[in-house]
Image (cartoon, rainbow over all chains, first blue to last red; front, side, top):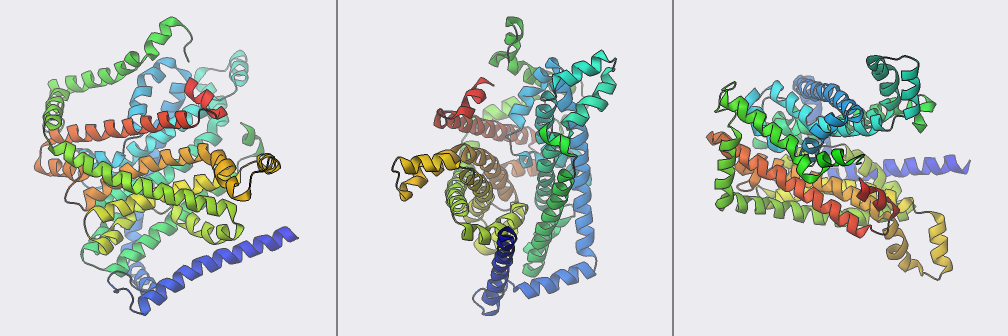
Length: 256
Length: 264
């Protein structure tokens, strides 16, 4: 009983905290404490958000960006999961790729953007490949850790029951490692969004980031805020979805 | 790791460089065979010459130092503020209730999206970059610190109390040391973010810095120099990450997690 009351109090405080910020923002802007160029009122931003939604520019930018982010993430998942499992199963593959990953993992991937633009132009392909490049390392590392931790007894049992190598991959290793692979995907998803937005901001070529920079250059502050708020909401919604999927895993996965 | 002496040769530091050399050789072969236009893919030899030229001159050193200084200032300020906020969130129920939705809400926001705003507010230059790095480093530190402090076992607290630790000493002697491994985890994430944010904000708007330099070489068509400058960034980021790992090992020598980490 006390617990639910506590939870309710927490929720109320959360709402109060967010509301306070919005009200303060509105008050500061309306009182003229900050130039509307630097801080447009929250209601102005909402109105602008509605306008860019209604004329279709925000939804089409969002679709472009999401397409790039998901295409890159998908490519990174395919390559990353296969490579991670290969590294866990074969010492030669591990020896071959480990130094590359050790060197590339901490590097800021956005620094490679000029190379991707040089090779693949400024539109979707260069962004998708850069996103894949940025996301593949956390996925490989997560998959490698997950596949290395698969219970040996299961693998031996499967072999002794006559399972082939390919069937072992799909029927033992992947199912057993899947929850931890998914955890790595949950890390990679925001990376894909950040990389897409940043690459668009730096390199142009359409999408949320490009329009954001474009609006900033023309000092259309309400549009800048509307786009940033949209990015915030998209990130929140996608992460909440990933969390829901993660929680929906069968209970026995919990202790893998 | 090593199962036999024959294997350990492969896993020695010299053995681990071999795959990188193999990649460079393949790259050189692709260039030499003219499979791709050499102006789009300069050979490793040309990139090597460019890198030698860059390292001999002042250009890369000055710009790299500017970027590193910006990243470092933002990282230090961001982690100091992050540790403080994380402590507050873990120790005060009320503070957490108010701060948690803001932290949770902004955690998933790409911090680079704030760069246009920061340009509006602070103009083009160091302030914008430092601010972007600060914001990016803040959140992982807050989340990790508060997690580490909040998970302090009651037994440790009771033990310290029984031994006469005063409440105001508890913070420094019990809670922070317990959270130290988590703080270092956060710091490693923040270090990576600091490079990404510093470089991308320089690529978007700056008059100097390595991000600007890379972009300038690209725009001028000096691709061998562009590759060399990117190579410098990769090496510096790698070294910084390794340095932090060594520091973590030194600071957490007393911690049980270090024993297994050092082994791997």
